Image (cartoon, rainbow, N blue to C red; front, side):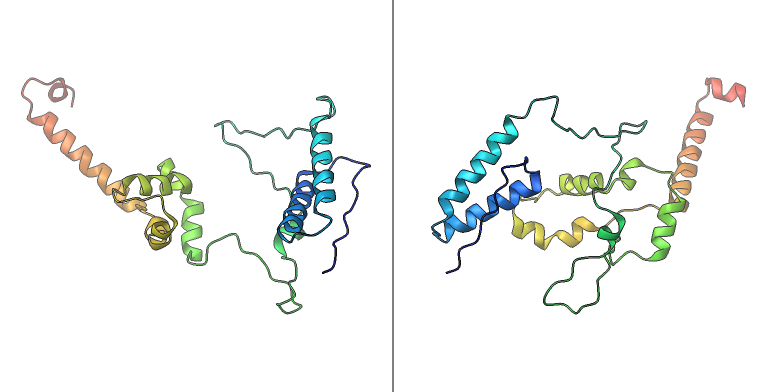
Length: 193
């Protein structure tokens, strides 16, 4: 069985991804009962101690950028070329594959409608809020992966009201309100209109 060579990182502090990779190497070595597992474990512990021992003035902390409504801006960590092209895998052909941020079942007209009509209820624009409301409204909800897999399509459905339905609902509500006020004999409404 080949022994994986451990890379010594004594000269600098490991980043979070490098630390995760080193920890994955340690776990693989321990599960495979390789002879270098103890050395990798010691290297991981020394890297963790080095991170803890950094002075607070030398530590780099990301500061979130927040807009006027208190929402965090999404600042991508990858460059645009890395974000659009996936790494080539050994099983695939040599052509790069392009990622798509939009789901497959959303049509172009839905995207245009969503872009143009940004006014409306906030919960219809926030997909996490919509999902949480769907789950909260489900009386038979069970926090189980099998149940979530079975009901994923139902949870993913969007209950959108188009603008015509919203306008009709508002007009009907106003008509009901006016007729109710007009039927009251001693109301101030009857004298002002």
